[in-house]
Image (cartoon, rainbow, N blue to C red; front, side, top):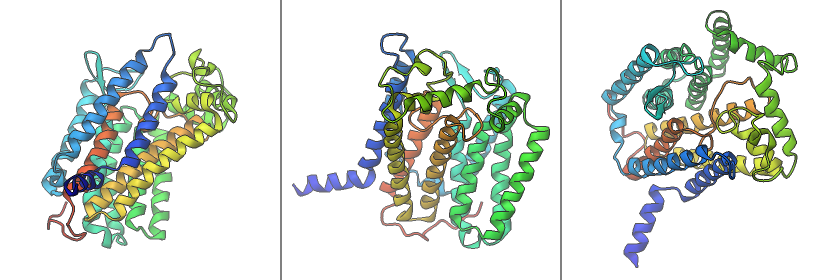
Length: 377
């Protein structure tokens, strides 16, 4: 009996049942929302396969000792590989909907920028784990920003504005967690405003400018650039308190709402489940985020603490941008929402992130917060 209790305790210490159950419920909500109930159910079938692969990836990664990620050589190799991959996809990938963001391998399309988000988190975790006590020195904010800016730029020119913004927000949240001073925070926002103005003038494509202008003046072009945002708001509003019921979302099922299985799945879910369903969904996301924060708080080393907070920051960025876009509070940028939107690249990345954290929970027991390899980036 004692052996069984010991094994169960070890399993619970490695895996977080409450978080995994919340992930499972969010995933099921996405599956139900994209199911057409009798018509073409290809999205549902393929998403089921991706979710099964995702959970398998989670358990496989959780069994690997990932302490090698603390090493400078590992981080440098990941960073160099990420840059090489982004350059390669820009040079040789075929455009899909105007963006060179995907490698297409037969029936499977792979978006490198998804796993590269985890590389960004690992880079920042390594950097801040060694220098968080010196974060009052603005040079560390600047240098960490340079590391991220290179990846940000390579993603932006694909062009993939949504992913680029997610990468920027992840960096910003991790900087805030590291303990940035108020004057430096204002400086960061000032630089952000200057960068946004420069991108508007020299980087944004015409359709990206149109989306932002439509966001500022939402009724000026509801048959053109503002169509997606307008249909999304109709879907959310028509759900009211209790929703139209599972399978009765006319905006999505009759295809008035485009990309309802990916970019606008939050709106499709809100139409069928209503305000109460959305509230439940946000509670599930809150459980996932707070469980990550709880582990980060008691993580045995600074690297694990910052990495876990980075993953939480990544998830929060996706949730806020996606929900804000669907509610008409933010411009349409084409971003997914974790564990719910259709697609393999982002799902595998998200489950890999949770698997890495589970591995850290297992292999870092007994370590001390300051017990770090004496290496610098």
